[in-house]
Image (tube, rainbow over all chains, first blue to last red; front, side, top):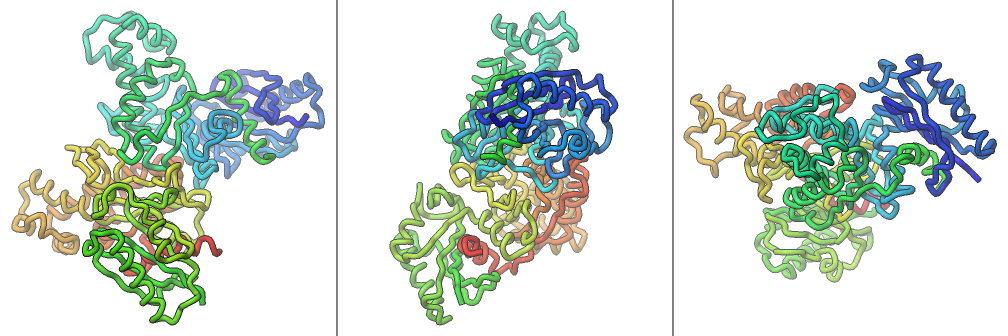
Length: 318
Length: 318
């Protein structure tokens, strides 16, 4: 059985798995990215982990190639450039370096674009030619599929929608220094910032009056909403409203059939999705009303990123 | 010599021409759209005008097809839907009706998308796979080319960027009722509205203190800027700044190699383009800086729309 190595390079973990052509992840492993500040040592570890997986599955000789998803990756240059959450600085020619160690067909792509490709091949985007996949974790990532193709951009950096300037409110800074940038509001991290903001704006009692920023967790905010915590409810409403305006604006760009959402913030379920749906339909232009779906990803959370990365190679074998 | 009929349906004029495969318009004519409130009579006039052109050039039997550019046109449905500047209401199945009168290969598209296709085949976009064409007339239109293809959208309504909500200032309404929508600021009409706004904000003397809104013309605003009229200069600066923010945001979407600008506002030349360039580079994310060009259309103004429409058919004969 043919298999593809999928690698998701994250700020915290590097996840590696073997994926078959139906998007099934047969075997997987991970290690901590930050334990390998030296790129060469890191890539040695990637190679070692991959070889172990292949041995475990007895898959030697059946590997079609290796797909990689990473933050700030350029698909056209094969590089990672100035990724805020990774230790390697400047422009890292990671594809070339890894190919020296593991000679095989190899592609790299922005992690959100890889997620979109995963949805297109294995998930909710299977029967769609136009959709936008959105990852709502530490940041706000987007992978755009139009005319049945992933949009790369001239230089491989399309879909950096987390840094679109929403010029909203007091203009929070994103990690890239964009004032009023979308991901400063709409992401798992953005929600935490909004919990603080709502406490600054209103005097309501809240369980969060006793919790410091670094101790805030998404699940606790969901739980608080379930218990009727007014600050949590206001934070979800505020986040959903800004997200709805952004998605309505994005609709005017490529007119997707659907937005497919994934990542930490989506785990809050109806608390974010219900107000989002309501505001979204308010903001949509008449010509789009009733034509754009908001869906949750159909991929299993734990292997979604690995399968997305593997989709970079499987796309070439359809 | 093979020829294509190009038809540009505008709120004021309907322009028709015969275009060869290099984008040269051999013969053209026009009539006033509003003189034909009845769709059937209008389409008869289109047929008549087309036949006259074909006869004039002795081109009978050499016509490959007919391409149409129109506001609010859906390429996928072959319809014009709720176009604010046209007299026909609701959803108009114009492609089907015109085909009955003139049986030949036929395509219709949003006018800005047609303009983008014209640039791709005949103009500044010839050697680019990723660019965005922007028309700055009564409204703000956009045609998006990515991966070497025009982006249609799920339902044929991609690129309605004039109605992106910029949530700026006092939130002007667009013709479609979007508060703070881009084209209320950035278009030939938007500039006129800003001339009034600047007079409301500042007490500077200006030649426009004696001019009513309906008597304002783009050329006069350009001339006033050349004479150092402070209100005109402030209006250009304000327009350029909002446009720059919008283009920087759009860059994060498909990362175009260039924006190609056309339409009335561009005729103001350096008064709009110089501040635009300056603000644009301020707003661009680091990863895009120095990689995105702002160009003026290379198409001859008078036939650009006709050639864009004809490009819909020529695209299929490359």
